[in-house]
Length: 335
Image (cartoon, rainbow, N blue to C red):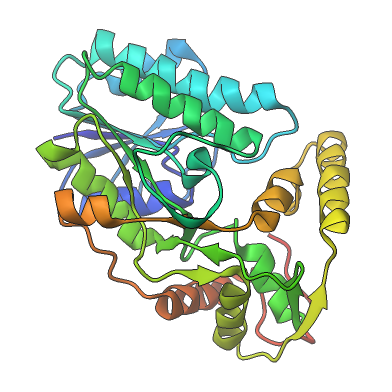
């Protein structure tokens, strides 16, 4: 069963390709024209250049594939329309290509997000209505609506991971770099609970969604049963790096202001800065917690990697590739 993976050169995409290849499945890895395919060819994947927001490139991408894993999208953008065009519009274009050019498709797996459900201090469940707080979450909610609207014509399923941690991750890199400076950020005194999942567990769960018949037409939170908090995550990061940190309290208004300024700077510099308005709103939310019970009951999915191990693996990888150094007195290496 040949699998197409869009966004295959991204963080989760690379791990998913690795998981599929380990199971002996042929993989076609969709990479945007001009994008860095990284080590996909070394993993044994067929690298195919295309763009989910360009309909002309998609027929050849899906043709001959039995499985489609749709991970391609954007996490940072200066405008709401950019998120909707790529994350939602690209999903529709890919589904339409599958209808026309992949008649034998056995599963279409969409990588959704807890951001579509919105923040909560109590565990979100899949049947609850979407309540996104920012443009990224809004676009992922719309992508999921579009995908499931094709359910009468295609076998569609949705994975909704929370915060993903592991080697290769850039979203949490900022906290590692700050900890390497001996700093732990606080945003008021309120604990903000977080669900999370190790990237290897998430990739394994997505493959499970592709093969279990119970998954068709359903959405699943793929999360560890072990929750943490932003403060707890930063403590684990400091432990993994072997550094002592001091707490620096950042007023919410300051963080929002920095995020807004960073968005303007990103547009002017034509590059994505590590902080932005989306990150600020996510950090300041009361919590991001989901219930992984449905995936456990229906699919037998259990996350295997604990937080300490996942953070340690991340820290070791960051050191190995030079994205951070272990001493707070060292200079940080830019990614």
